[in-house]
Length: 141
Image 1 (cartoon, helix red, strand yellow):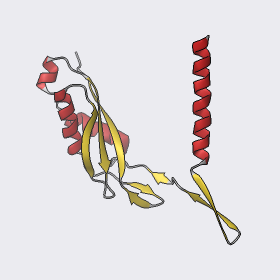
Image 2 (cartoon, rainbow, N blue to C red; image 1 turned 180 degrees about the vertical axis):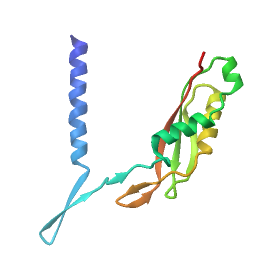
Image 3 (cartoon, rainbow, N blue to C red; image 1 turned 120 degrees about the horizontal axis):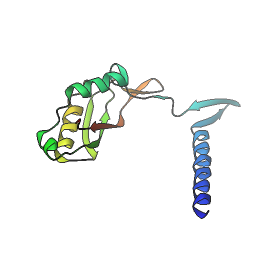
Image 4 (cartoon, one colour; image 1 turned 30 degrees about the vertical axis):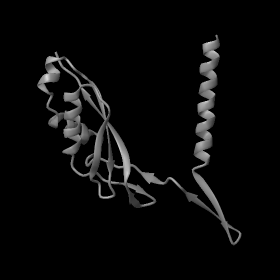
């Protein structure tokens, strides 16, 4: 019973905080008695050329399961973080959650060989942004 109440209270807290954050994304400015709504987060996310399907195809085509990881039956999801520049170039890739040293190295190699992305746009202006990409390594029997 205590757990149910705690979970329910946590849920409502998250919902209320979310609504508060959504409202804080719009700023109202007044100048000469006129009101202008300014969207602070009018942002288009970066995109892999061709979309998510094309990215999945690229990863599947490029992935080379390391022999050591196969012998040690290592599998899982490697999280690779990187930045996408205003020009769409991937920079500063690093593993934020690794599985096995050989799989981590392979995930970094794949991300480093990706073509340029379509950069993020904020109010129509290209912006450098951080991105996290999960790469799944799974052995098939």
